[in-house]
Image (cartoon, rainbow, N blue to C red; front, side, top):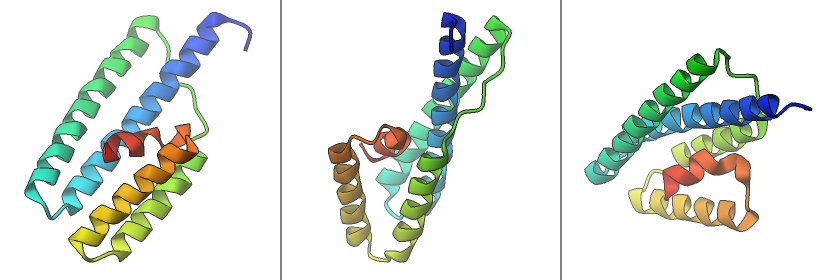
Length: 122
């Protein structure tokens, strides 16, 4: 990339893709939550993520551009593993402990590709 506009478009596209994934994750996990308070928090985060997505789409419209494709493969693999492992855990207490452990692992490793998941778990 040689132009500042290209870098801006890439950053804006990454923000949009990450926000879109986060909204989907919040919605998906809120549907599975057995604790009403947790479900409500996740639904609120999903709502905010959707509004952020609308704002980002408006930004693209204003600059006359479309989001560029970004490589979210690692994030996708991480989230697939997380979903599969979480679905295998039946006990609400064990599920909460698993989520806390995954959150700590992500923070320790400093994995930027897991940012939507970290936002979900904080």
